[in-house]
Length: 66
Image 1: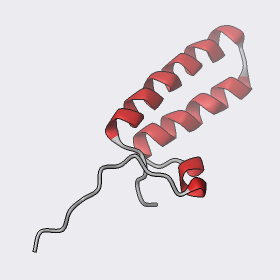
Image 2: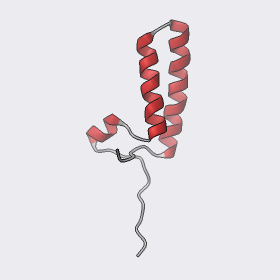
Image 3: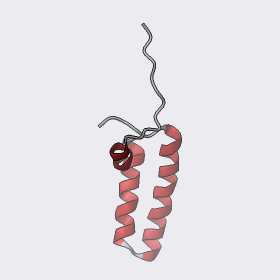
């Protein structure tokens, strides 16, 4: 999988994943827990399924130096 999430986006997703994790714990919701784990995966892997489908990327463009 080619990374399509930049560092800023990854940090935002990491914060969201922790927020969902705490909410899942207090609400005792397995569905929210699953969503939290999915967002953690996206943050650590640097890859987003929805960005892939849309053809979007927030990764900086790497320039080739010849």
